[in-house]
Length: 274
View 1 (tube, rainbow, N blue to C red):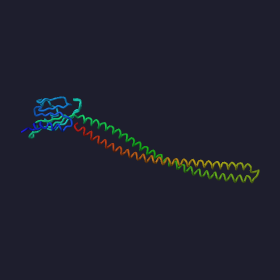
View 2: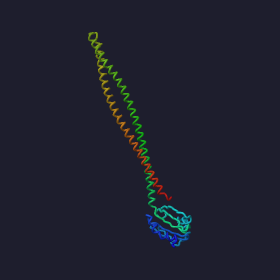
View 3: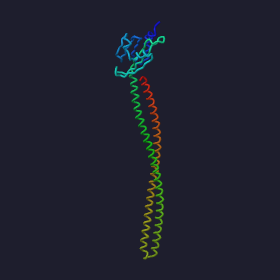
View 4: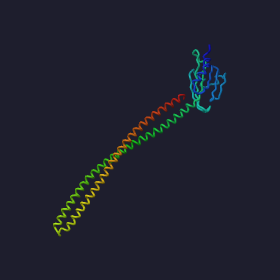
């Protein structure tokens, strides 16, 4: 009946099919190397019959000695490409009678690690930028709120100024009426009222001028009020858009956080052998 070691040797072609890249295969018994197959990335060879003692410190020697599966990863410094060494003990009737090991290229995992590291860096930068934009949006919203408050205060001042202008207009109208009455009385007084008539005329002119000036100022205030209200509406619309943009950036930041989490999981998966 074939031994377990013989069964393993017979199944090597099947084992090799489980790897996407060509693996190095090595099988040992308790004393020596019984099988070795090279791969293109791994130029070294270990002839059959090589004593196990010469493999001290290797993955397969550890698997034989400890009786457990061993996985170790190596960088590209030795063979120009990173590789993964995996070895498992071979047991027969509960006793470790040998071990089988595979060495496979690990460049894809290295690329995955580098890619996830780059991705994490980009995500961190974009996340920081998103936070800055969110903070800037919040600051703009605060400033717009302050501007709206200032506009409301300015409108209140214009309203009070309008009340003052109304009083001035009323005084101007009364001055006109007073000047007219004075002119009439001066005319009745004849020659004695000439000087008084001149004063009455000036009072009427002053009243007319004041009334015209008040009308112009009132129209200017009305135009200013319309401009301020239009600006206030614009500020309100911008504030609304700013809040919407800020909410969108929050959603954006949450999406980046999720991507960062996935990148971390990929990095963890890529580093499983370390």
